[in-house]
Length: 301
Image 1 (spheres, helix red, strand yellow):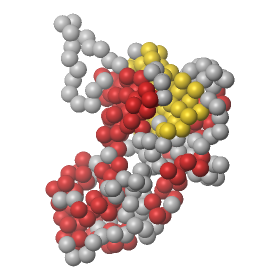
Image 2 (cartoon, one colour):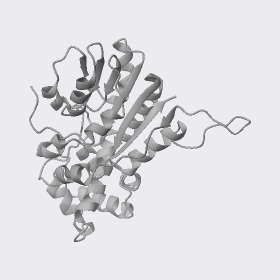
Image 3 (cartoon, one colour):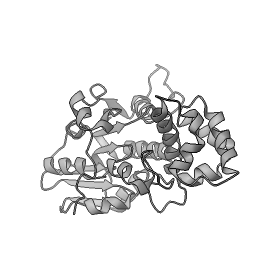
Image 4 (cartoon, helix red, strand yellow):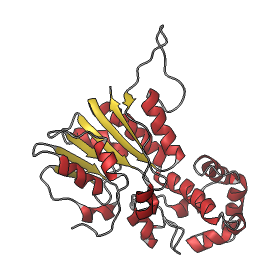
């Protein structure tokens, strides 16, 4: 039974069109969520096609699709290759990823993803994970907090914010959103409050869920699992994700430069197809969370 209004899929038609679906192909949706992208893939698949979906969030179990062509795996997409092999899938024809936090996760106060509610500081996509936002805020060294606010939040004031948090928690543990906002009050200048809070929350969420490591693992697995001509269709929501995706599509690496042969050429795993796709003004008006989405599509060489 699907949960009504769970998540409005972003760039639905464009992302699925990027897969160039074949009737009898094998496809993977690594961010199942409310099942919007998966339903569209199944609609275009023939009777011999297959769709495997991943999501580590237990809340999505209520959205499982009853279809003989569909297999759901309740795991983090960083394990995609391992679980595909376990299910006797050696190659796939396309893989879709819609990164970021679902509307459902944002809208449930107890999940702690949103700054709108007073709730416990959680932000775990896998609710069984031992590390929550509360762990990061109360247990991490000041130097580690400074690093993640600088690298993942791209915050100029990262050292000062880290110091303020460590000083505050030495008096009392920081356990709720309201407490956390109170600690950060002097940095939340009028007119910029939401932007700065969003950057701080983003940094903590990326750390809690090890999102960039998972993304790198996923892209490496996609390179190995896609057959030549297979499609990669990926939506990112912030520059850290998008830079990794763009760079990996371009040269198959996350840092440094690939080794060239004596003619100056190097092998790349993918060829990008088309230009960067962003949502229309109409889609953003209907679904404000689509505003920062960037879709990149590539073909496995």
